[in-house]
Image (cartoon, rainbow, N blue to C red; front, side, top):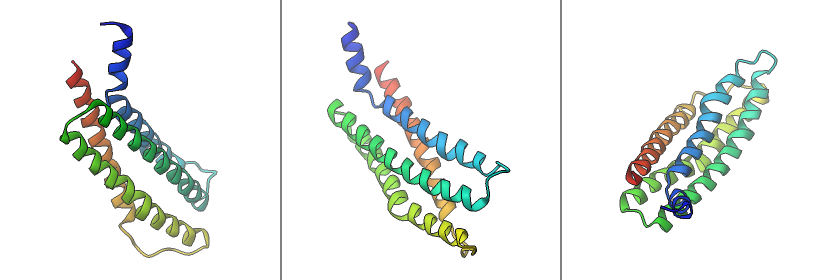
Length: 149
């Protein structure tokens, strides 16, 4: 197999998009965010304000990753299974961007104004979606690698 064919096959495999997306999500959601709240020099309102900006940017990057994944799945002519999983990912990313991130940002505004927002399940739902997204992307990424071998 020539190098050009190997490069083409690698680009047409959704594995690279899945693993890139996992890296972004794990880096922000599972590493940077919890660590931010352990820094002694950062107040809770500042950490929340930074988080609001970071998660809005992550959501935009995830939309780009979703579009890339959809393009690769379409160009590679993959099965309906792939489209179903992509639809689940799309629903998660949209729910986070349209519902959860704005709700969490509003809670941050209340805290920054010196108040305490009422109890909410928004963080738990967002975190659950992150775990489902990461699990699904791992499954898809390794499935794509297995299909190529």
